[in-house]
Image (cartoon, rainbow over the protein chains, first blue to last red):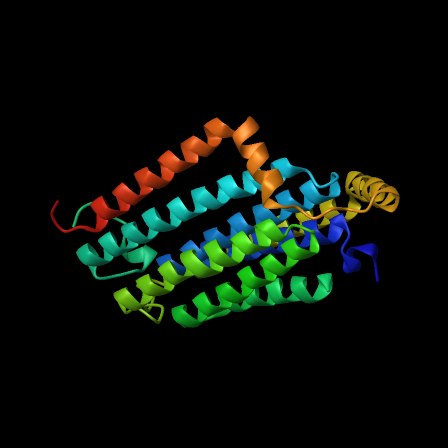
Length: 106
Length: 169
C-alpha cells in the first residue's frame, strides 16, 4: 500500500502511463481502423491526465488547463479528419481493415 | 475516490482494447472518458472535467459511434494473412516499454519531491478549485495567438472533413 494509491502525483502519472500503454497496444495489435483511432484518443487522454496532474501539483497552475483546452481542440479536429478518412476509404474499398488498405492504387 | 476513478479508467481502457464488437468498444471508451473526468475532479479541476464530459464522451464518441453505425462494420474482419511473429514482436516491445516506464515512474525522486512540496503548500493555504474566469483571463491575456490558431484549425478541419466525405464538390 504505497502513497500512489490515495491520489499522490505518482498515482496519477501511473494511471496516465497505463492509459498510454493500453492505447499503444490497441493501435499496434488491432487491425480495425476505428479501433486504432480509439487507441489514439486513449493516448491523447493519457497526455491530458499527466498534464493536469502536474498542473495541480505545481500549485494549481492555470496554464495546464489552457493547454488542455488546446489539446481538446486538436483532438476534435483529429476526430473529424480521421473519421472522414475512414469513411472515404470505406467508400472506395468497402473495408475498415488496415491490412486491406495497403496500396495506393485501387 | 482516486482509486475508484483510476480503476474505472483502466478497466474501461482494457475492455476497449480486448473487445471484439466495435460498438461495445466505443461504449467502453465512453466509460474510460468518464473515469478520466472523475480524475480531473479529484485534481480539483472541474473546468477540465466538464469539458471532458461534454467534448470527449459527448461529441467525439458520438461521432465515432455514428461512423461505426454508418459503416455497418461492427465486427473485426477476418485477417487476410495471420502475422504471428509481428504480433508477438509488437506485444513484446509494448511490454518492454511498459516495464521501463513503470520503473522510471516508481523510482522517480522528482515526482515524490513535487508531491511533498505541494502537500506542504496546501497545508499552509488550501487548494482553490480551477474556475472558468481564471482560465479565460489566462487565455486572452497570454495565449491569444494559440487560441486563434486553434479556432482556425477547427475551421480547416471542418472544411477538410466535408471535402473528404463529399462525393463530388
